[in-house]
Structure formats: C-alpha cells, structure tokens
Image (cartoon, rainbow, N blue to C red):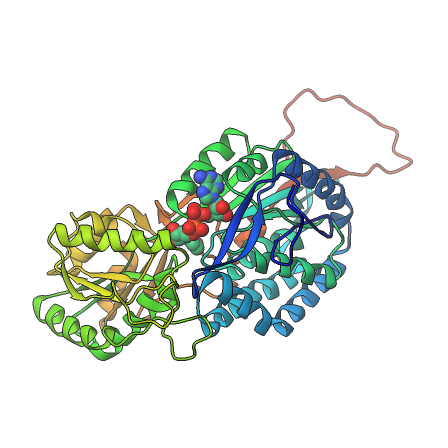
Length: 504
Ligand code: NAD
C-alpha cells in the first residue's frame, strides 16, 4: 500500500479527506511543464459502496433541513469560492494548463451557478389547487432523488462541477462527484470549502478514479441519477449503462461548433470574435468555435487573409505567463492527437494556412501546440467530421446561407453555433432552422448565463434535462402529487363508490 505523500490527492468522503485504499493510482501532470505533480488514487467498488452508504445516511437529514438553512450554506459556499478565486485559479492553471485569467473566468461563471442555487426555495416551489373534487385539494411537490452523481471532464475543473452539482445539493440530494482524474485537486479544495460553508458531512463527496470507478458508481443500486459531461463516445456509453440500470441519466458530449460569416458583416469584428472563441483555452472548450464558414468567395478570401495575419501571432505559454494567449493542451496524448488530425487533414487535401505544430516555447517539455489554421477543408473530410480538441481550426467555405445550414444540420454534433451578420432576416432564418442547442447571433461563444438552460442537440447530448439553469433543479428532483381531503369530526356518513373518480 502506498503511503500518502504531500503530492498524493485524496478522496473526500463523509466530510473527510481520505486516502485511497485500492492500491491503484494515476498521475496528474502540469501541462505547462510536462512534469508529474501528483498521484491520484482510483477508488474500488468497495470504496464507492462505503461512500454511497454514508451519503445515503446524510441525505435524509439534509433533505429535511429547512430550505432557508440550505440556501444559507450555499450562500456561504459562494462567498468562500469568491474569497479563494486566486488560489483556485492557480490550482486550475497548474493541473489543467489554462492561463490564470481564463481560469478566473471559469470560476466566476461557476459561481453564477452557485448563486442561482441560493434561490432554491423559489425554484422548488410546488403547485396547489383547492377543491379539485368535493373538499379535496391537490398539490405537487418536488422531492430530491437521494444519492446522485456527477462525472466531470478535465477542461473546466471548477465551472462544470459547480454547474452540474450545486443545484443538486441545494434541492436536497447527496452528491458523489467523480472529477476527471487529470484535474482532481480543485475538486478536493472545493470539498473543503463546502465543509467550511457548513454543509453536513456526507452530503458532498469526491471519489477519484477511472472507468472502473465510474462503472461502480453508475451501476450502484442506491445511486439514483447520473449527470455526465465529457466526450461523446463516453457520454453515449454512460447513457446506455445508466439507463440499463434504471437511472435517470443526462450525458453531455463533445462538439464541433461552426461560425457562419455572412458577406454583410464587419470582417474585423468577425475575425476578432473567431480568434478568442476558437483558440482561447487552447481550443479545449466544448463550445470553442472549430470551423469558420464564410459565405461567398469574396468573404472567404478577405476573412482568410485577415484571420491569417492575426493567428500567426498567437502565442501559447505557461499558465502563469501573462503574455500567453492560451496554455498548453492537457497531455502529450492530446497533443499527439491534434498533430495526427492535422497530418491526416493535409493528406485529405487541406491546406495549412498557419502552422502551429512546432511552437516556439520556453519549456519544451510542456504539452504546447501553436495555433494552426487549415484551409480548403470540405464537409466530407474526416478532420471536419470529428472534434479536434486542441488549437487547430478549419475554414470551410460555402456559397450560401442555405448551404451552411445544411452542412451544420448534417453534422453529428449539435452543441454550439454562431452566425455573424447584419441582416435580421438571415439571423432569423438561421436561428429557426439550425439544429443545434446553443445559438449565437454576433456572439461567438453562446454559453448562457446561469439562469438559462444549457445543452447541445444530436451527438452532443444523450438523455433529457439541461445543465446550468432551472432545468438542473428539474433533473435532480421528482414530482409527487398529493390529493387530500379532511373529514369534519361530526360527519359520520360513509359510502362506497366503485366508479372511477371524477371531478363533477
Ligand atoms: P472524457 O470523456 O475522456 O472524460 C470525462 C469523464 O469521464 C472523466 O471523469 C473520466 O474519468 C471519465 N471517463 C473517461 N473514460 C471513461 C470510460 N470509458 N468510462 C467511464 N468513464 C470514463 O472527456 P475529457 O477528455 O475529460 O473532456 C473533454 C470532452 O468533454 C470534450 O469532448 C468536450 O467537448 C467535452 N465537454 C462537453 C461539455 C458539454 O457541455 N457538452 C462541456 C465540457 C466538456
């Protein structure tokens, strides 16, 4: 058995940091340096079972805690996250590689979801009708599900877990978070903040691990619902296994997000919007723009020239380098995948307009890639069909808005999309006809604020229910409808009626 070292991540179970007992470990790297910075334990089915047991116990009392008290704990958690933003941003930067300013952006977005959950009392209010039949009242209440789980990806170590899980806790569930094994440390730090905020032990748990750990969680008889965010292949598998075990499942997958550039637009504005949305965070965002789709030959030519001039100056760098435009990608494997996708695109006939394959960086051991821009890409190419999760982006020129809409609707993914235009007619046609969950009009990353729902379509989401927004409360509660009547003490009449009850 390994002994716990300074650099060994723990689980967080029943209010305590707990070391792994499974003797199975993974390694956490800092993408900026390529160095291993921690070891992460992978929980066994027995450890998962122990966690579920204590969570089940804690959930009962938490669910019967008053809404006001629960909201206060969430409020305190929000305050602590704000106080510790600098520390959390550094933690994210170290283990994920994104720049500190980008990390702060994700934390502040995550806190918005926490703030929404402060309003839990308003959000879970039920419905009541008086006199639905003779002296009978009917009401519907939303009750928590019990023990639930969230399984999160590496690219937003703080925002996505907060968006997935805070409302689930606020409505009275107990949570088991399984963070990405590549970025486990911020989840443990958030657990400490939950505890400090006054959340009772056992209501919030973090269990680290790999596929075996996930399988143990999602097939456990006492886990009621699964919220998953990650790649499409895994999302689909989680959805299939979870539903086979009669769980409520929502599984958010990958994306291939287009930006359509109409001929009437100010191209400088469109170029600036594309660059931030496409290359920010080393393109490791599910809502990153992957494809520029200029409409018309002239637009394509002018847009490409202007874009090329700016993309070639983009600089990757360490998470704490203030001059870096974006950080390293998450792992050497991720880097090799992007390089392979570029090579294959070239073999298929794509043109490398800007080549970021050999960036000029200080630390050659870090997992760095420069910004690559590919031209002459067509919808039949493999590079267009798949999600490339790193800073290589594509230009696919089309002749009309209709052609753009058809290509986007044909695509496997339907996470985010954007149109840049000055025409209300074009924008309206686009927003009406496009088969994508999150749509932007002159907004390059159409990720909504916390009080709107978020979720992709097609291969970007399996199951129902959205993330962020009020829909999270619906996903993590079940509705119970009660019909009730109270008899007057003095009324002794009694009849038996075999007819189906009617409200006459
Ligand atoms: P991933 O699918 O590799 O991992 C996500 C989670 O699933 C992790 O916790 C991981 O440990 C676990 N996991 C991995 N393989 C598994 C398996 N075979 N069985 C069970 N669990 C498994 O995703 P990632 O690389 O961490 O994240 C990047 C992906 O997430 C991208 O595709 C990105 O588009 C997507 N993403 C989507 C959204 C969205 O809202 N739709 C948001 C963020 C990220």
